[in-house]
Image 1 (tube, rainbow, N blue to C red):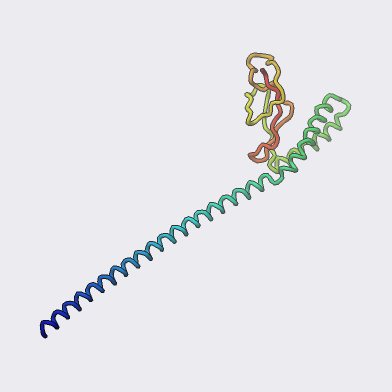
Image 2: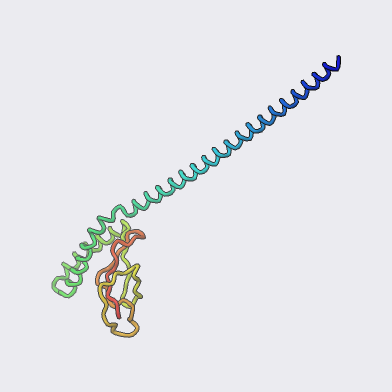
Length: 178
């Protein structure tokens, strides 16, 4: 081989090395790009999956809440009937001649109350002397407190309150001592 041939061979070898290096750099960059795209797609998938899980949980909770309070309209319509039964029992109690009538009305009242309780209706227990809570009671009026210990407390309960499950469907109407 002559000097020219050797120089050309060296140039060819250097050219092949630089081409190989460029190809390696391109392959590495293509591989890195694919890895980056894959990680982006994984992240996107995980976010979408988490969002879907949250959606399922939220709709499931809403469905349970709906079933718990689906009968709210019916319960609200029945509360005045329940109040009327309580008023009737109060007035019949005074009349000694209507003992049989009282037993019949009491039987119907208890049956209605038990049926509504089975469907989730609960009476809110409020008594005179309890502390007034604006979140749980509806104040209809204030009167001068009969005693100092009743100031800011409930003096009288005008109308009973009821809950359906955990939701208050009718707040108890109370009179507050001032």
